[in-house]
Image (cartoon, rainbow, N blue to C red; front, side, top):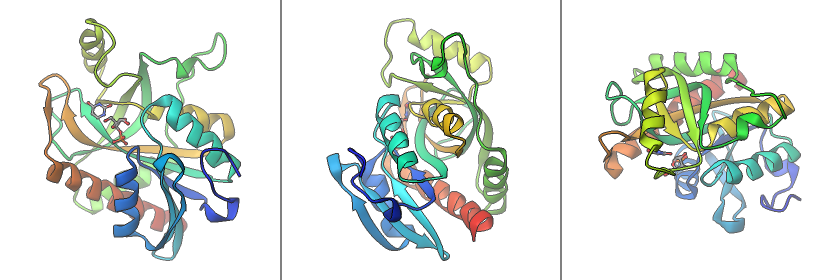
Length: 239
Ligand SMILES: O=P(O)(O)O[C@H]1O[C@H](CO)[C@@H](O)[C@H]1O
Ligand SMILES: O=c1cc[nH]c(=O)[nH]1
């Protein structure tokens, strides 16, 4: 049994959804899965396994940031997980995106984190699994949800490390980066390391430059949308 996910391999499904927030893991499991079973609550990093349309699915809390998700991903790999889909909130870097819109992260730039330099002299640019993001996009369109596909950015900082941080985010925005969050570069790097399938879906909870945060109901709408979209894709690919 790994140190931080107190579960046996048979308790964790091949397909794992990855919210940062433990309350979101609990909400998604109770609302969307049939017969959800809590398999770990160590450090309140809740993990549940249940079924959706007969497909076994786990929902594992990752916590916030690269170090936290890095631990959970290494332990999910030990437990035999094969398909990893992050379901997170994000700060939009453009006013073209609305609150509760969905973003599929094709690739993840980094700002203030060195995860893309895991190997000396190599800067990886690992992307999402193509079949996953193609199906996720199709699911969103079929479900009539507002969806955008493109590069996102992973940061170690929610509030910014220096006075220059906003300028760095503006440079990323100028280069077409849609939104910032705190885990996906680790997910895509660790998935590349082990040959796992990975994708990230985000909902817009904030607008970074205007510093407006959506209210709880709006964030909930985005969470419901992305969960429905992801489970539709899981049913198509694995059902
Ligand atoms: O909503 P989650 O999945 O936690 O994701 C985003 O929210 C947290 C910051 O509030 C960071 O983890 C960031 O990546
Ligand atoms: O602005 C935001 C919103 C959610 N998550 C982040 O990392 N940044």
